Image (cartoon, rainbow over all chains, first blue to last red; front, top):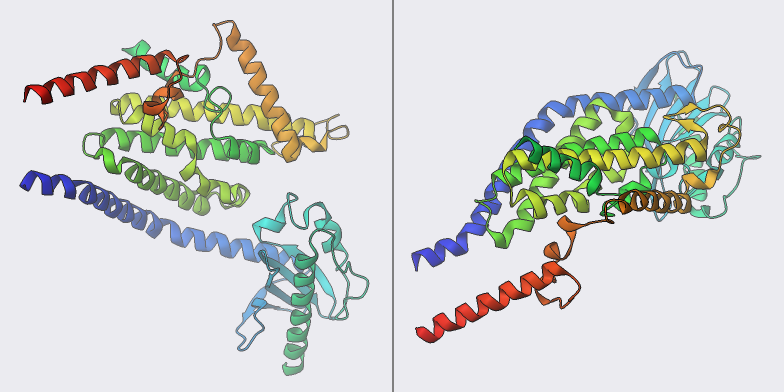
Length: 178
Length: 246
């Protein structure tokens, strides 16, 4: 009877012990890796901001209450050359992440996709991505002259466009408040 | 003894190459061979996980009950994958980005679970480590061969550096999915041709013996199955005789 109970319990005990040891090991590795990961993510964000606002000398993060859902973070260029925004847009299939630079004249200085799905050329916006992004450079609040929608990625391109409208509105509000 | 270890190592590297002979791990092979750097990252990550999981599973083989062995293996493999993932994210963020979802998918890579089930649970720690190293390097070698062909001929670059002539005259489809299958097929054909001289391709470690349906399979052409059925029949007869005697 005792042996039977032990035989029944042994698999559960072994699996539980393996899970606990694994969790402990991961906690230790995470303790060392987490600060480095955070730094890597921060460096990556800063590098992206430099790409979308190439003439920037430095950035200062602005804390904004009631920002639109599409705006994750807003950075002001320290010498007043514009704003850089970390944006997110829902296409219905994927969450798209991108960085947007708006210069002091209220025109788009740069746009860069940062989410993995759309950063390469494999799917979604695919090979049309560079053309799509380039069409927005120098475009103002009305987005006139830019590519409206991309075939096979109509929802993604529409979501990006809609998020840009939010970004322009927010930047206008910031300028007005400044 | 030394020869035995060398044989285990070479088996994974060439004789039973996981990608080109056993045709395992096809998903990362096709997805991560558009660039040499991506292939190198995937190969090294999988090798580290293979060695680690093989060693731990082999060390715990007498403690893990058969009934929960697969969940235990998955937990162990997932732990190693997460460790590799965290370290890569921390120290090689660009490579981590490039690998995307395929890094996490190493957990369900057939090669790793296959080696745990077929080798590590039946052999000692050192042999399992050598097997993990051989299979991992075999996987890496196959990925690098395929990535070199696809990147040079498909994109005109090698590890991101432009290759003269091919930069102008390249075949873009090779970097897409159909090109991946094409190159994969050609490499397997070349491997089969090379192995033909040694009496054809042998897939001993991953043949009927490891099949979950092995006990019910009646495939007469497989000598291992005939042995298994004979053994099962003998066992059943012995069991019946013992019961009758009792």
